[in-house]
Length: 185
Image (cartoon, rainbow, N blue to C red):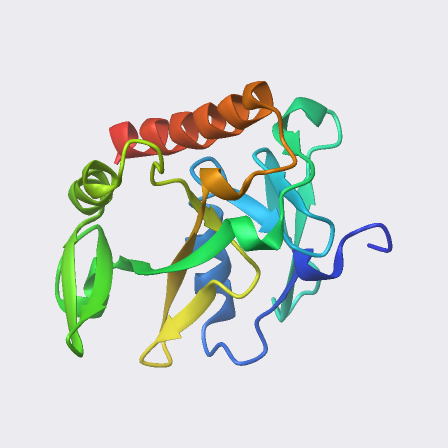
C-alpha cells in the first residue's frame, strides 16, 4: 500500500506501551517541525502522520504531494545532527504543558517549551541558527509510558549542495513553522 514511501518514513511503535497516545503526541508537531528522510535526502515541511494499522504499531509520514514547494531535496545526512534536546509532556516531570528537556551532568533539566526553544535559539551563533527537525528515530518513551520527541537540528553550514536561495528558503520555512507553533503554545 505504501510502496513509494522512503523506508525511514515508516515509524515502528512496537515497543510502545501506549501507542495511540504516542501517535496523538507526535501529530501535535505536524505543523511545527519538518521531517527529514536520510534515505532520500529530503526534508518535508508539509506532511501527515498516519497509522498504518489498527493497533498503531506502525506509522507512515506522508508528504503532501501537492506541496512540492515544501519538499527540500539534496539535504545531506551530515547536515542533520542530534541535539540532546527532548520535547516532553510536562506530566513526565510533574509540570503542565509541554517542556523542553536536556540531560546536563546526568540530570534532566527542563523548562517550558517555548522559553527553552527561544533560549537555545538565542545561544546559537548567527551563522548557525537553531533549526529543529525530526527523524524516524526521534519518537521515544519516557519511563515506558509517555511519548517524548528527541530533536535533531539542521546545520546550515552543511547544506553544500544547495544554492543560497534554497538555503534561505529552508531556513525560513523551518523558522516560520516553529514560530507559528510557539505563538500558539
